[in-house]
Amino acid sequence: MTILDMERLNAIDTDAVLRQKPYPYLPAHALITDEGYSRLRRSLPPRERFSTVFGRRRRYGQAPHDRYVLQYRPWQSYPEPWETLIDELKGESYRRFVVRLLGHDKFMLALHAERLLSVATLRRAVEIRLPHLLSQHRR
Image (cartoon, rainbow, N blue to C red; front, side, top):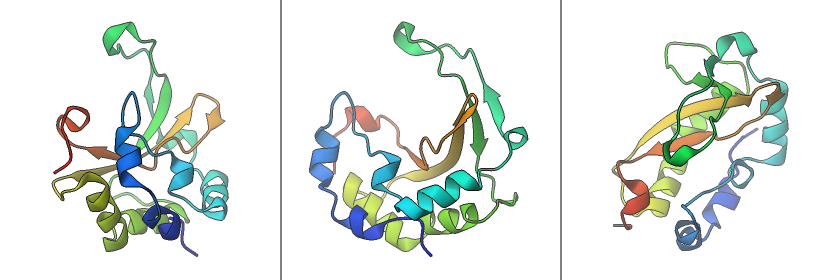
């Protein structure tokens, strides 16, 4: 079984995503099958594996975004179906989708999962880290 919904991803209007305000955003439910999401939630690694991110100052006077974060490290093991998701995110099909979304291939994927205090949630499966992504145009 796959976790990423490549059919849904391939149907996404990338220009519409990039026009969203206040910034381009694609929610996890647009990326992952419903069954895959359920499997990921049921098998979320224990909280002890997550780092705490509490009280971190944010720009523009925003309140802290308190959460637990599990940063992907290739030398660590992850429960199924997380290993499947990681393999799919590192695969060629997903990379082609991100290239289509951004209009170029100059990006690095940073994988992490978050738990918001006591509520387990898949906040973002993938964060695309690009310098000045929000202020630059495609291509």
